[in-house]
Length: 90
Image 1 (tube, rainbow, N blue to C red):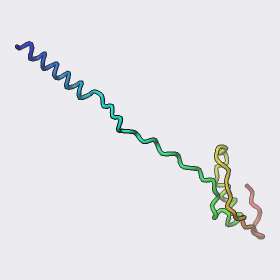
Image 2 (cartoon, rainbow, N blue to C red; image 1 turned 90 degrees about the vertical axis):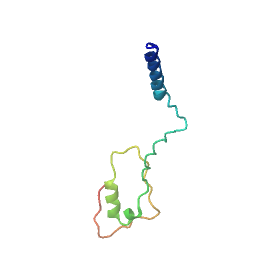
Image 3 (cartoon, one colour; image 1 turned 180 degrees about the horizontal axis):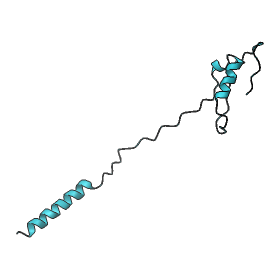
Image 4 (tube, helix red, strand yellow; image 1 turned 30 degrees about the vertical axis):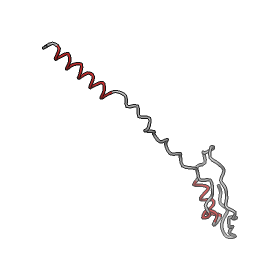
């Protein structure tokens, strides 16, 4: 009886450990996909076409080396031109 008790205890402990550590295949738990990257802004804001200097400042602030972004869309307004301002270089 003394040899059966440790063997039975060892078998029970091994079964308990394997049952506690096994599986965990939970199909109901679905990981949500990561959020989509933010969309690039392609519309020029109305404040940038308020004057020609504002438009030039907006265009200079954009990244010049970005060749993969979409083209800019201008609002249906024309940039106001001033008779007294000097021409701006891009």
